[in-house]
Image (cartoon, rainbow, N blue to C red):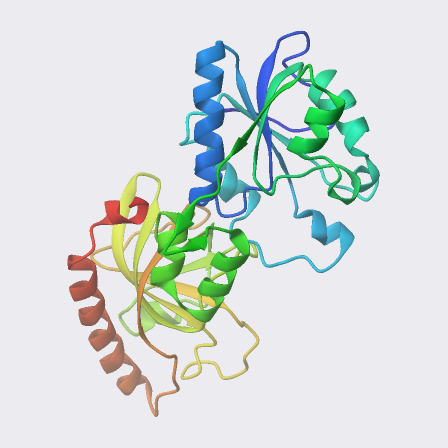
Length: 315
């Protein structure tokens, strides 16, 4: 079971050697999975615990110009928990921490707190003030620490990267995002209480607070929705709900209609997997016309989902 610890001062591995990697792991995409896989293999070979160091927020949120996150911290930890790691150390990235040099980070965190016997990074992996720390820096200044550079992962002649996944997802290119992620693009969040308008017209919806995660453009999508261990076929709308509420105060509102479900999932955590876009969001002339189109959307979604097993999200 994955062990998560989360302050900047203590570690459960004092005096015990470890195998370590460092990264934001935003998206936990195929490139990240390669690094983690190398880490887990090395830890088993050396009979040492594996530790992935990550951060609560993107460093650029402190340093400026932070990108939209593919995954929230909770989502990242959930995905990392499936990869065979022993533990994840979540470091709070503060303005003070941003000034920690590579030397200070190695000596205070990697050596003093984790007794790192081996460090594995991706080809572009770096750490410390201005990203000074990297495999080459470790080899030149700390030859006593074993190092390994995990090879980059190429899909369709492009390097898998979080920035490219953000681009594809924000443009609505779900198939390309899926190839680089190794699963369908998704958002994880808490189910919140909406205005319950969908219930009054015969199509109750699950309203999701996506915790500021990146999601596709506004529109209607065929989706799978997971809550706990239960998977629902669903149709999901992202946007303003222009037929019902044209105020545009809820940009990016995510509402999923779960097929064959009438229960209450408030305050539960749900994950919505975007499989295929059905249409753009539009304003209809009446509620009746909206209802007719929801029926059409649902039928299209069912046909799409019938051809896409839920397990395909991890292919």
